[in-house]
Length: 316
Image (tube, rainbow, N blue to C red; front, side):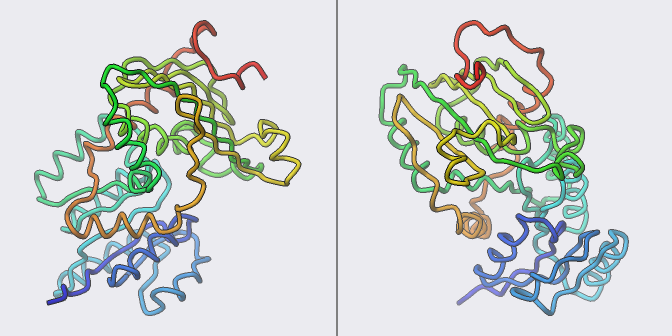
């Protein structure tokens, strides 16, 4: 017998990533009852759930969810796509309304927020899931299996380069405020740090060589890997070949000198993630802890002297 559709709420529906959540809710056969965003350019809802309710004020959204509950209609999940610094509060909202939370990365900005939310999980009996979709990418899972089959004492050498150009708007938005986004390493890098930790194990050392509002770089030693990383939103950092082709994004990861090609296969990963969550197998707070600790340390570390290993773009 097929399970009845689950009831969803969604916070932050005007944002770019929200459409992947809308698609995932629909593709898994569930329904969106209500959504919230202070911005009202949300016509994309019509492609998925035109009959759902929409609010631009949190207080009215909160009251609506409470009224639904009192009328016998309970939200099963609240999907959270709001700005990073609001995740903690919106997760608490979901659990207070007896719903599980499905939250975009980073689940929170600070490691101690994880501890507090775990206490609320225990108090409410609800779950908090984090979208860690790279863990479902076929190329990444294949690499993890390959590394797991090799001798455990082998250290792998990794270069991670991710440049995704952003215009002046970025610095005016919440993304450009380190107190709201967590800065470059958190905002555009946390999913890479999660993926690397998932494959190569716990962090041994974490050194930062560059930390600016538009780029960051450092050296991360994991149990089974040495990682030189460089993250940037500055188009001037793009390789000449990419600029000549008019590209604004460059993603490159090499493992022991071999390029890891995973530029394709991203479109359905949120749906895969939702299916796992609905089956009770999603990734929770503890799974997210190492990457949250890593990016927290990056944005709060003193810069290290350029000795030993560092990313080659540092010298550009």
